[in-house]
Length: 287
Image 1: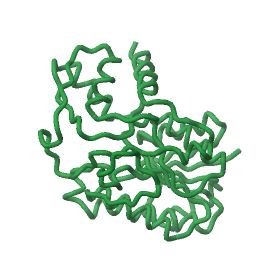
Image 2: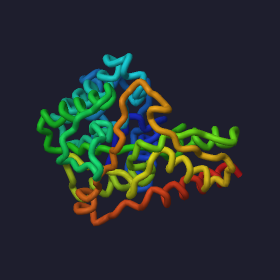
Image 3: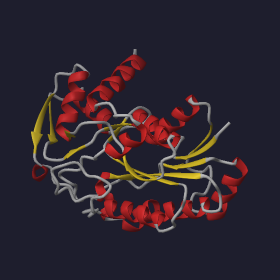
Image 4: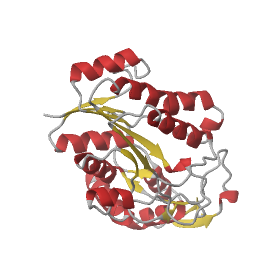
């Protein structure tokens, strides 16, 4: 039986999805939350890897408060830059695969075609900068078993996210204003987990982009969620200037998924289809 350690697997949005996908495939999963192990203690991580004889270590832990990171760069760097380096050093002496998740926010958003892994990152926020630094720290270790996955705009079960928050607000209000000039790749966590395992099963290492197919603005994602949920709230498109935020966000950060498809022969399903599945399952759970 293969064994996996999932940092953030107990309560994290993506971590929970990964733990479920692994268990469904017969893996022994150690889904860790805060307090289970000191993730900043290299010796402790090495010991846990050794005692569990883990085949894979997944890191879904990150500092994701994009605006707050502007005021807390040290805290963001601790989770987004230093933690990946510690994990990389921990697996360096083992045969374990390290799977680390990064973000579309490493790009400046000035393109108008999907970003490939060959495109030069140029983050405009502390969050994006620290996530890029985490990638670079890992790549500089030259690990033979390393998989870095840039993803974006996560939604799924198990934790509050953009889609669930929009539905909560839409149930209370007659109108919501949502930014329409930021476009990206929505990602359903259950699909992201399954497709991560597909990459692993094909022996992939290196840097990949992974999300659901298609693109959307935040406004379009919100409007589709509200429509699918049968709510009457009107979704009003506004510009980023009309909804000022502390951190700079890319206006366009759609991810090119062709490298993933070439390796796996899988085309990720369109995000509206994944969204409908998520909302249908959520509705059934509430009956």
